[in-house]
Length: 294
Image (cartoon, rainbow, N blue to C red):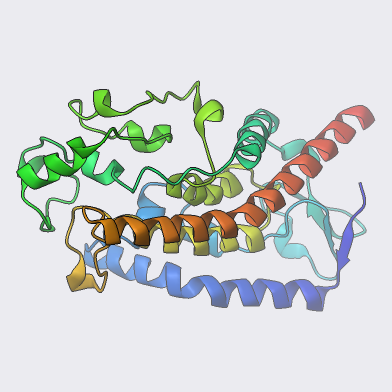
């Protein structure tokens, strides 16, 4: 496999830039955790996804990179090996089964035409017909009454295609969805207009570790933060106290605004998805090559 060589100065500059970039995301999370506080928007990417703040903060190059110079710090880094030439990803550490499954999902999503007809009602379906104390963000007020929320949910058929959003629907809301997503049908339904599919690009980055480097992971995390903010602004919750103006999808103007965000995120997510695909294919090729030589 062809490798791009980075001198010690080059890779240390990249590592320093990455640390500076993620610090405004990571440090507030750590500060809140020490104080026993939580943030319904900013903490989601740490609470829902399994990559810890320290893992996001730690720079690593990913597949196809050779780091030269003093690479001692990579000797004990999982997924990397050091030899006389420098430090590089260890092909034998690649999670092949995970990458193959992820490859199929991302290829299917990339080939599919975006759909923009859900209007972000998944969060509404997650509180549909629930008692106030049962909702996920019970500490925060709802913008509408339970009856009005139910009316929005029931106004037209729900059109969620994303299993990991659908699975949090209330039991009363699930039959109202036009499809019934399952984990087994995820690759058949995932489509690039879905906000959750765009947020999940970050998940596929860290699940592919060490194949996908920190630079792409941070790019996907940055977009996922924006997506999460829109996701919550379009929800029935009132987060104006935190600076999140609502997107009132119960109105035609709000729905139009939501679709604008969907189109923007789909357009920005597409090149990230394709970069992910390139890295996954390269890592699988490296893993196959390692098998041949052993």
